Image (cartoon, rainbow, N blue to C red):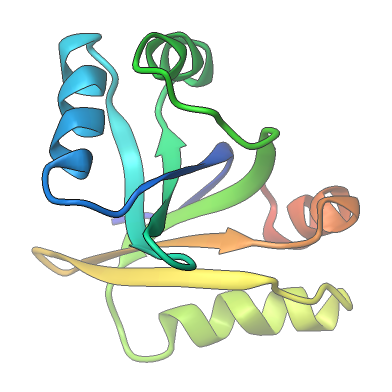
Length: 138
């Protein structure tokens, strides 16, 4: 599997941290036909949770989120990387960014099964152009 690196849109939303809220939000996105590249959620403060979204189609996601009454953060650019799983795959990506003097803000990675991996890399928005050049991403 060839490695692919591309820029993606990233949005966050704060929701009430209660049973069924994730199901409500994800059900609304499903019903609107929104496909997500990545998603994760975590508690944030008292009674709140943050959900992070990497949608396949940003415009469709924003419209569906609005219908679901989600208040979204400002759009950010991140990088989505997919490739063949191997020891050091993420280390190689991090080294390319370090060599370009780009500091990573956050990174999420997971084995995709079948010998593949995926990662989403977040960085300061001022570094997106520099990171895209270092990673060979458009």
